[in-house]
Image 1 (cartoon, rainbow, N blue to C red):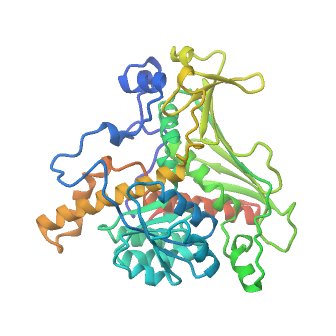
Image 2: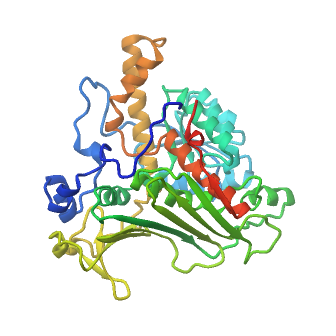
Image 3: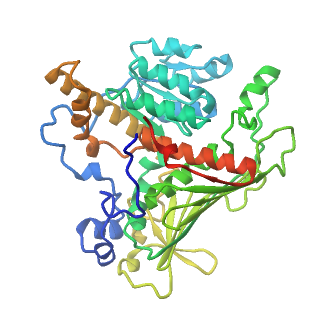
Length: 466
């Protein structure tokens, strides 16, 4: 995209932003209700459908889905789709027979395929979820779009910048189809609830960001078949793997960039193999320090040798710091920070001499949050991401049908794009192809920096699609 606009930090022109004074003083009903009652800040639920819309529905009809790639995560996707009322899985695919057979239990009515091209030729399939190894994404995505399927592609989109751009370009050239990147935290109710706390300047002058994913595990998988053993351990091969920062850290990195509304301009990386010296050439502990145009820095740590402190993100400000952990969040106020008023009603948790004010989507009052655990109830970020995909795919399809019925199938593509802009605000929050490109690019540049233990600049052209 040659005319890609610059993104300034905490851009007040963003529709997601709240005015700082209104936020602090509770000057709007929406912000006050959010603080006192924990109402999720999901714009589509509060807005009327655009004028002239005839086919858009808040409750969508079923969208027949196919799932390509049935490893551990692919089977998690199948289990999650089974919980959605409008996402019947009618086809599944994996070239490895054991995975295909195991997945039949999760999708007993689905037609099994060993070749993804056969699944794409199935006219009963309207949308596909691609959960294959990262380096296999590009061709499958392109073929799926050519076959006329709506596409959800897991993140990272690809293992090289070139392949990532090819995916984004293919999505851009298929405006009649809906594409969603698998950055599911962008659809998550908890993240959407925390977003205005960051964007409004409610934590004061922004300091820095820290993020971590730590879990002691080898990442190595076993197989009695030597050839299969090599295939399933692609994450340990530096020619195919995006490393810890790509396969694990990309979600935290994407959320941080989304929250502050900036793209990094450079990254310095460090990495080594400390624990799992088994022939791999992918680091098992890494650190990446991202630099942003505003002066904010983001430090990401990833580890396979320790589970200490597990996963978290911390956003530091002069008035308060926000910590997000396990899809829950807390605010830690500075002693000299102004009293906002709503803290009196909020639940507070102790963290070693620190008192954290709970920021819980759907229930921030102390009386309402004691047993609230949306993750335990199954409302994971993946659930929200797939729910958004199915709903948005149907909405997108309906809009395209409206357009073609009025102007014909050969109407000006530019006019179609303008027409589709009218439904963007009605769609459930999600990550599109451009956002998937950007997140994948800075994860790949970070992995490049980690492998070389050096600083790598991220050019503006890296984020652009022709």
